[in-house]
Figure 1 (cartoon, one colour):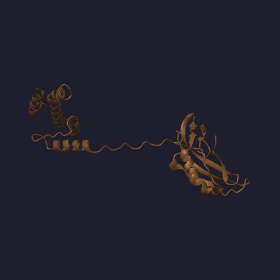
Figure 2 (cartoon, rainbow, N blue to C red):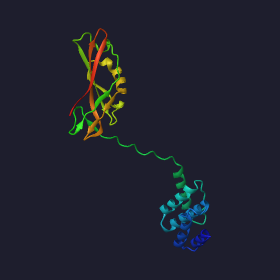
Figure 3 (cartoon, rainbow, N blue to C red):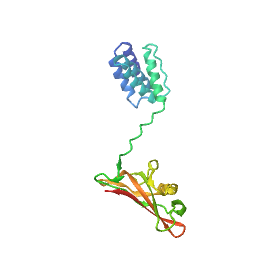
Figure 4 (cartoon, rainbow, N blue to C red):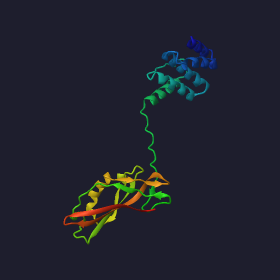
Length: 225
């Protein structure tokens, strides 16, 4: 009954009255989905003539939300309504665009000296490695060699692998083995005013002979507060 009365008001060009009747159907869950869809479509027609394309598009989106396969004829109205409905249907079926990636948190540079108020990370775990003397060219206890890396340590205490790079040292043949170890390493993260943060640091590994074939190594984060 309300839909028929609203259609009569549209035919009489009483668009405000028609809109009032149509909203009583469209916005009332007690009415059937089919009636609500019809009401939203007619509200799109009324909105088109009273406000413009955007009002029609908004009403058509509501109709499509109830009936994604909606087909409607606008023979007695402006042909532009057919195109507006088609555009809204196409937008509904198009794959949603992924949200832009969130910006990574800031990195505090602790290569050398940390900024004021920042405490550098520290190793809490590094796996036991067996490094042979041939890897570091240390043949007696009087000889020592080393290797340094630079990397970003996350606020979770994990080394970010894409940031890892060799920055110096003479034990270059240990690089692959140390990289494998660093993939398993864990850190107490750096902190800025007590809050865990990402920090860029230098990691140093020192090697010295132990016995006739094995190499002793130590490791540390090189940073000053």
